[in-house]
Image 1 (tube, one colour):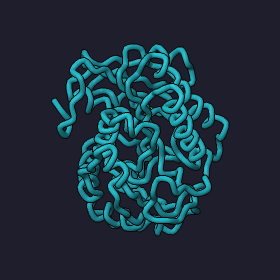
Image 2: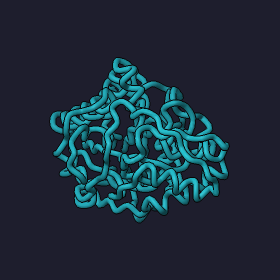
Image 3: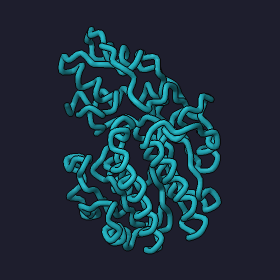
Length: 324
């Protein structure tokens, strides 16, 4: 079974780190549905075991409870693997401001461990999650690779550093690496809980529970919200990309721009509730506006996102209605 016509060797083995997380679990499920073997690794610090419920008993799936900060664990996980889809990281810009040392250990050293392990074990392709946060205070819209500003958070520093290390591993150790700069991914299984939850599932959960949500800032910040299935496609296309595109980072988004206050009102209308939001202070390190130029990913990876914000948000609302 292919995904949008994408086909790998029939004996291909994938490793997905962060397999119990939002993006990682969706990647595991998609690759398993294509008929390939998948190893999933997660330390369950932020991921949830129930995210793997639909496939954890699949005979082609192996779960490894392990930490990317441990090189031996990474070496074991990469054994016999052809494609690594590295999603494991601690997210949240404001939390990284509170815990810069931990973020450096986890997001930078953890990724270097994975790069080293993949090189040592002869992995064919190494696809990893970067972030639109690497654009920092650059005000040019849409965001174009190569025009990055001053970084605004320790989280952004970790992702930019990961890109530089990946480039070194391509340059010196011939590991084909592909960085995916995700722009505000949303969809099924995204965690609505906690102080650092992503805005769409958090709003949905609170509105469905009759709680008045808080918007950080004035609500006029804009984002290029990107549905999860577009991100799945990007990972798979990167895993099949030519070596000539290795060592690069790519914007992964739909290429649209939505204002937070408009999204809030869209959700209230879709849920049939009439609740005005509260407004709180801006979050530390947040970028005001974000919108991606995806032409590089289209040209070099063949990335062609199918789901607009409107199509994706309808699917997301249906999923949360059924699962919250």
